[in-house]
Image 1 (cartoon, rainbow, N blue to C red):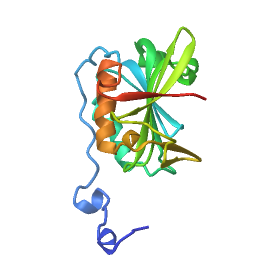
Image 2: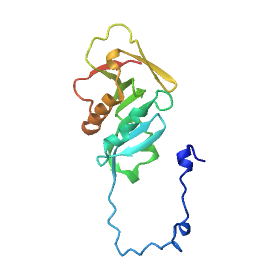
Image 3: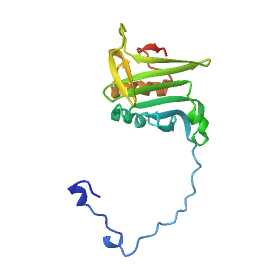
Image 4: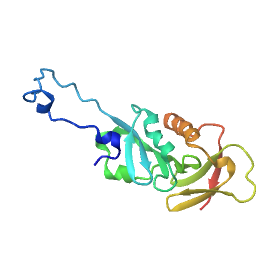
Length: 190
């Protein structure tokens, strides 16, 4: 049950053994419940194509970007931040909204040390995907291997980011709805 000698030295005593004859009841509250605050969702965050979380402007953007530092390229390999079509109360998010692809999204895939960023934009029912990177020449074929889940991608050296750099780009995208200026967009042609 305990994983270390230090942990086995800790014991939790029942209330009576701690010196109290009986557990004390919770005192009654005469406070009226405050009006429920409506939580608005503006974005969907998908972790490694599995877990979906809906967030809004009230969120601390760093709280969902922490997993970028834990990405390993295999089990934890992707984060997708999709802008919802319109802000909506979190209680009204349906299965259809949850499964919808979205017209604007920023995705990263890889590991904390080497990840690629892709921007997906849909305009007039035409979807375009771009790999983001620092300015530079893109001559020849991409040579940097970035594994993610069961897939792998090859990108140019200027298109490889660390978790810390990617977090700044996600933060800008979350607040502004666009990739920060200064990044080069290379269209992905399928």
